[in-house]
Image (cartoon, rainbow, N blue to C red; front, side, top):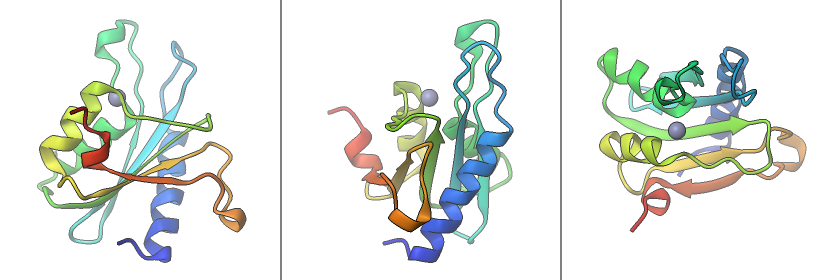
Amino acid sequence: MLSERQTMDLVEAAFLGKQHAYSPYSNFPVGAALLCGNGTIVTGASIDNMSYGATICAERTAIVKAVSDGMKSFVALAIVANVEHISPCGLCRQVIAEFCAPEMPVLLVPGDYSEERNGGLKVTTVGELLPE
Ligand SMILES: [Zn+2]
């Protein structure tokens, strides 16, 4: 279970990640933040490519950044986009499942999230995100 503090930090970090999104083709900036076992938060941004298949999602960016820096133990992941309901794509679900335990919480953060009303934050798990 994430503490309120951890949740707030993670949501904030995901918004920070989104600021660095490169989205000239999709116009759909996404940010992610990954809480690592050592307490570090690694952010990620979506990075478009002219060749659609080369586009890298924010959540994959965060995981790849963390793993390539030697971290392989993760506590929670937050994802934010400028929409009400964000959901990781199939590729990301695969990558998340590779490194994260099925019970790990995944925070799906709406673009208009505000702390005061805990607005629309949806908490799911890696296991729930995975197709059967
Ligand atoms: Zn994806």
